[in-house]
Length: 122
Length: 226
Image 1 (cartoon, rainbow over the protein chains, first blue to last red):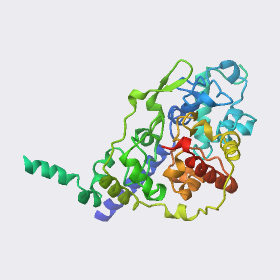
Image 2 (tube, rainbow over the protein chains, first blue to last red):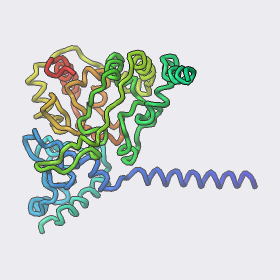
Image 3 (cartoon, rainbow over the protein chains, first blue to last red):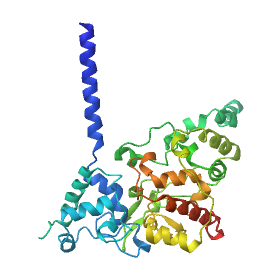
Image 4 (cartoon, rainbow over the protein chains, first blue to last red):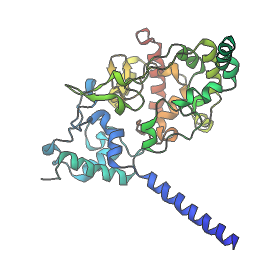
């Protein structure tokens, strides 16, 4: 009986540990934006980040519906994952593929759509 | 009264520090000493100073001794830059009122703390993988690599008045850091800090060696002396 109880508690602990590991694995898009994007794209997402003073190319204004609606979700995904150079844009936009999971990047693309209040082609 | 003063002095004496007392008490209130490093953004945002749990793999001992006696800011926008910036007229700006200075230590305390920090080496494996090739680079080439080819200036200063502000300044990097650490961190920042703001740009071996040489050159320029 005691053994069975110990086994059940072990299983429960294992299940909870796995659950919390997964819960930690994926960050919220707003937090990822705050951590990695704000430094260049700005607190307001308007491309006026703290780093821009000496940049030869200014970061994209994520609130610019006209420009952002001209970019597909796939293109935005590629730019975030593989960097600006992968879509023939600036190397100042680094690749975040080693930092963010594909799922987190997809969430970020959707987060960008809330900033521009736009969809591709609209 | 005299006894109290004596007890206080004893509490901060080199003898106590040699046993790691200050690291465990004073330093650990802002720095992670024991590891593991931040595994979540929540932990990363909460950092008040650099993670020191791998300090022995990262820093040059003589630099720690000298810096602790006369600490000067290395990250212009603090540890998590987002806590120290505000919306400005042209762009986001650093809000200096939110930045705190690092406490200065006596020579004896700085020496004792540095010796303790150098014992913290959980990543000898990563360091052992790096080979630093002897060589030099001309400044213009190094700068072109850093600014134009790889875009590192987006976040790092290469001189006090040129570059980005969210990352640590690079013109003192070679004075502060072991060359193998510089190479390893550029190669795979996430192996050291999974949530670091530093991206992995898949830098080639040749370019990593050039960065090490360039940072070495920058730190020797008198204009960048600190």
